[in-house]
Length: 129
Image (tube, rainbow, N blue to C red; front, side):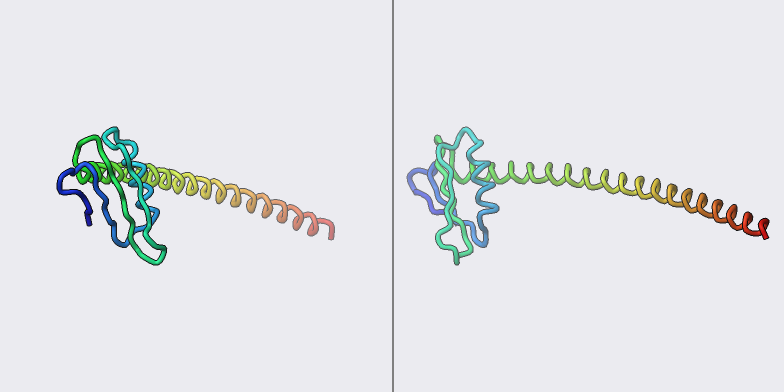
C-alpha cells in the first residue's frame, strides 16, 4: 500500500504486508544505491505486526517507480547470487564424487594388499608344519 502526497509524487511511504527486516533492509540498500534517491529508510511499526513501512524520497522521479526499479534490481542480484551458488554446489558435488571414487580405489587397493599379505602369511604357516 502506498501512502503518498497528491501534489508531490517524489515523496512516498509504502507499507509492505507480511514482510520483515529481511526484505526491507535489502530494498533499503538497493534504494540507497540509486542516485535518484535522497532518502530511503524503513521501520517496523510494532514487533507484533507483520508489516514494514518503507519511506522513499527522490530528486524528482516518482517514488513508486524508483521503488519498483530497486525491487527489480534486487531480483536480478538475487538471480545472479542463486546461479553462482548453484554452480558452486554442482562443482562441489562433482569434486566430492571424484574424491569418493579415488577413496574407493584406494580402499580397494589397500584391501588387495591386505589379502596378499594374509595369503603370504597363510602360506608360510603351511610350509612350517
